[in-house]
Image 1 (tube, chains in turn blue, brown):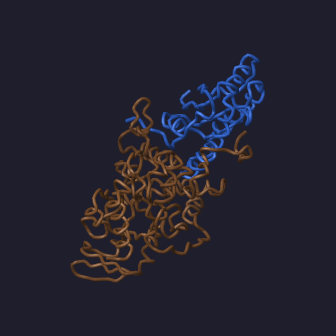
Image 2: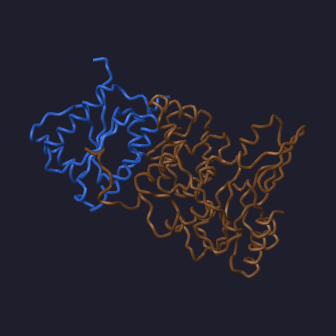
Image 3: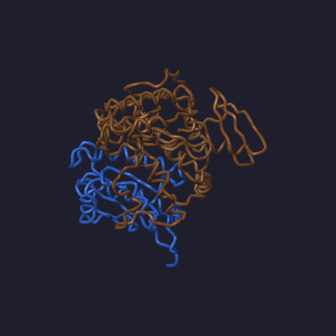
Length: 140
Length: 315
């Protein structure tokens, strides 16, 4: 295989989406192998720095997933996250990054089916777009 | 000496003489024409060197961060909004401040003026609505309204939002129909054109961080650009690093930027770095109806939330 394998970095909230990924796994659900999971304490922990760092290091897409509104382990982390994500996404689009390279979702720890479905959707959007060449740090 | 300068000096002198404040922050003349420098006066003699003209482009709120003494400060519309920001963000207390408000009729764009001449400008004199610029071989009278800075020409809050005294009468606040025309122009471009637009914009950037240092919002003890473990952004002039820096710098100002233009003023390469912050200003205005620094009661948009916030973009 000579083609570059697509890499999608998934930042999953420890209290929900990460559990959903776990449940999807033990339930033997099938989804894309292009996804690399990074466990974070809360979707509110996600900063534009982390997303840009993922692109800089060669990720072709980023997926951030947290708890449904009202179900945050820290009560309101995802409400703040939501406001940050929308501004972040719009600014990325404004600067010429395809919005489809950055995905957000709310998945509870019981929703393994939704996790597998969204994982497939994310991969199906990003993989056909091919490798990302914007905000990538070229090796010096 | 113009009336505003005279009033500012008188107010500053009396504040220092009566020991109402320990210092007064204002502007004094720069060493070259069309410039001013921020200046901290500690004595009444020093306060007599304060000036006010259409070159007071920097934002004095930048010099308030974390100060302990009683401070007098000269504030035009945007400075006063940044002072309000500082109060909201607990960087200074209202009780420490004596704000001398200056209703502002806009500052002029030194780059635009200089572009009218091939030679160096050696003299600049101001009249109420115009100014006279002299070079070695020619003298030109130009109208102020044609040379306003881009952010001043879309400014709807020229009057200070908080102040203790005013150094001049309030000016009429213009209502600008399409205040985000510049952002709309970029939004109308295709994705590749947008990428190219910012590539062209940033090609001269030398990563001096002047935009960050001039910004009253940038007061973190350690800026993300100086963090080394993890290193969020490389130190050199790699195009990705430059873009990352400008993205994050603007993003950290989301919902806080008053569009004072200090970043553009400070840029030695004359890059319009407002192209980044303007998009965020437009978004917070459209989505949350927010304009930064208009009062000291409401929390900024990223410091609060509403259960019904837009989230159609989330799966």
